[in-house]
Structures are given as structure tokens and as C-alpha cells.
Image 1 (cartoon, rainbow, N blue to C red):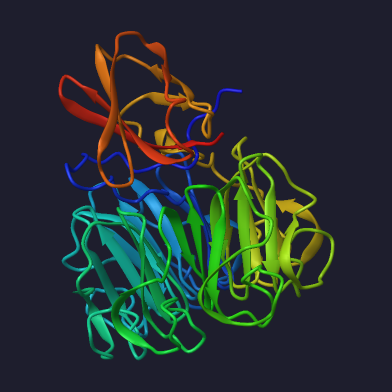
Image 2 (tube, one colour):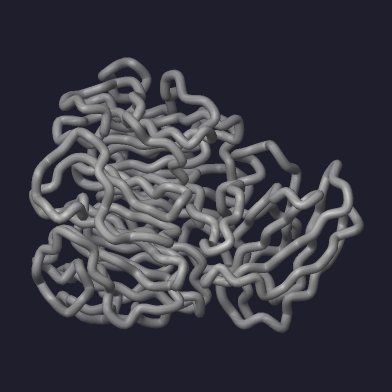
Length: 464
């Protein structure tokens, strides 16, 4: 079946040395008690707890149905921290709202805001992540910046001073993705390595220590990584062979390796292959498989596995009530799943109405559909409408159909994780098949150019 890309990058001009940044334009996001969705019209809706303004609609009234975030247009990606929300606009500016008492707004102020406020001095932003009380931003030059709570070094600038102004994280270049945990941060480099900083008492640094680090350190033994996610006190990484690796806190089995023993180096999650997306929640983890099924492990007190139980598990279990999923997100104790038909579903904790289904009832038996939503973006072509490009199927075995609308003679290039062009071809027709079956299983970037100008960069996954 033809589908538009659902795990895709922002439309950025390609750098000669960097894989294009922001490998996963986030279209759904979940915080502690709130959820966010990015509409295909580039606006944002939110639902759940609003006591501190995390819904961004100009009130402090919680809502169990989606409400529009005030004044946000042209949005390309969204993120949620524990008590604050974040977004990036297509002009490269960054915006935050909700709880800013620790300076996580990055606008020089401390306090609450129930409408989005701009991160001061930030330009060229391509991705954003919300942590416990800090915000991490990736710029399109491959550098990382942060603001907010910093008692454990989660800003990565070598000190433990809280700040309400954006500061640069030390020594990071060539980064392509960021993630923020409760008290720590992660970044993925274009060479497939992972870097960590912040609180390390449970091994969150993944470098063999249990020590807090105020500057980034490399996570041990991880190569070929294509996605990262930081949770409450544990971290996940997705490898280009479809396997998942985890490290950190494990009392409830969030590392998924069949034990409840913490690990300060990455361990492989049991029995998972063909994974295309990962999300780390409060004390649990979720993965999306290439067949559209969802798998979860760790704590399950509120039914956030979606498998009809509230029993914890130290190995992955399938969410039995949902299929055809295109994207996933985890809050502290609730899970969101965006289906490839554009509908949003949720399971787990719903005490503040974060499912958006007009109730505050938890569920562990069947996924609940959110109601009253806009048309949700399931791919980057729906987030930014500057170019009409469809690439399908994705993931694929290497035979890709490229469909262009209203474009003249075009070239296509395939770029690996090191930023190297490993394949190029001219596209002379609006519908053309390109053969990449010779490539190894993994993640690549498909760059499309018209008259020498880059018009699209999309992530593709080759799986055999």
C-alpha cells in the first residue's frame, strides 16, 4: 500500500559533512499528564492537565478534549517535558510553554506561561526535547543548546548552575538528534555514536560509571545507532539492524533484558527485531515494529502496555489492541500511538484527560481513540507543504517508488550515516522506481534536488 513517509526528516538543506538533522520530526508527544499533536496544517493541539499552562491555550483549565495551542503556526516538530511543552517553527525559532520555574523557557524568565513564548536568541533550531525541568535544542549546524534546571549537569555546559538563558552544550558537533530525560540528556552523532550527560546515579551515562557528568561522554560500545530516547532514569537506542539497546534504571524491567538489575552500559532488549521507532517513558519503554505493531516493557501499573493487564514485564510484550501504527510517544505513565490512517490512540494513565477522548478513565484493555482532533500529520510531506514528494514503501527491501508532483528533471542521492553520498541517479519522470537492493540493512537519507537545489531530505529504512 502506498503511504507517505512517517519516520522522516525536516526539509533542510543538506550539509556536505552532516546527515540532515532531526531524523524524526515529532508529530505526537506526551508529557507527565498532557499530550500534544501536530496537525497537518502546521498547528498544534493539546489535551490533559493544564494547571501550569502545558496546554498553551491561554487558560489554566485542564481539558479531556483537544484544544488549540494559541498563536502557533508553521510548526514542524513538537516535544513535551514533564510539565512543559515545546515546538519548533519552520523559521528555525523555538517556543515553549507551561512550567518555566527552572528556566526551561530559555527567555530569561522563571515562572508559568499558558501561551507559547519564544526561546531568546535561538535561530536555526531543527529539533527540540523537553526533560524533567530542562529543554534541549539541536541546531541545523549540528550543535546542541540547552536551558533550565542544571543541578545534575543536564545542560552539559560543564557547570551545575540553573539558567533561564540558552547555553551551548560542550564539545558536541555533527549531532543529528537529541533527547531529554528527567535529569539527563542524550545526543546522537552522525557517525552513529551516542553521547550522554547529566545525572548518572543509575548508570544513565552508559559509560560504565554511575557518576553524574556535566559535560557529554560517549556511551560505551554503541555504533550504528539511528534513534535515541531518554526516559525517567533509563535510556534507549535503536540500531540500524532493528535491534534495541537500553541502560540505566531497571527496577521494573525497563531495560527489557529479562532482569531487574540496573546497567551502566547498554544491554540488548530481548527478542526485538525489525524495530523502526523507540520511546522511553517514566519507568517503561515502548517500541514500534516494521509491521505496525507496538511492544512495551517495564512498569505497567496503569495499563500503559495496552495488553489488557497491569502486570510489569522485564521482556517486551505486544500491545494487543492496536495495529497499523506509524508513530509512538510515551508520557510518564501513558502511551500514544498514531496510526497510519491519521487517527490517534492511547492507553495507560488518563487521570487528567490526556487521552483526549472526553473522559478521565484509565484503560489497559483496548486503545482509546482521541476525539475532536485536527487532521494529524503522519509524515513530513504533511508538515511542510513546500514540496510534493512521496516515497513508498518505507521501510522497504530496497525497491523504492519516488513520486513527484509538478517537478522538472530531478536528481536523487542516497546518504549514509557518515554523510557520504553512496548512490545517485537522475529522475526524469514524475513516478520512478529506484533500486537500492544492494544497500545493507539500515537507515539512510534520500536527498532530492531540482536544478541543483535541494528540495527534500527524507529518512528511508532498508530492511531485508
